[in-house]
Image 1 (cartoon, rainbow, N blue to C red):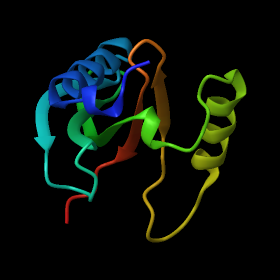
Image 2: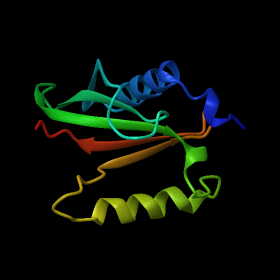
Image 3: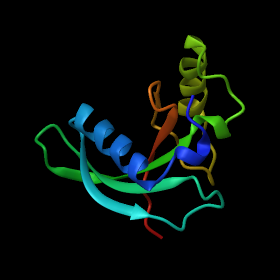
Image 4: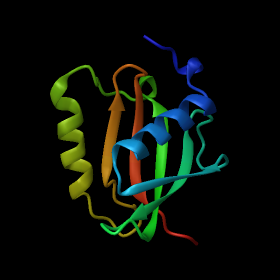
Length: 119
């Protein structure tokens, strides 16, 4: 089991880029936002969202953090499914929706996909 101290920017970049390769509707652009949020172990990346013709149709924000920072037990198979179902249905005017969640079993890290809204 990896400790949260072993989670670093390099590992976050590799996990986010791997997620983009798995899903052809995302294009990796290597743009990090290092100063968002309060936790030092959270990493944010902006990626392009593509349509079915592989044209840019928007931007997404990936947030990565070690699963050890969460109080949830991701070793159980149903935890991720239930959490995805809950977060996808969440509707609040001040909270961006979570469009997808990915748990890396080998690295024990979490990736959240949200729409990017420039301010």
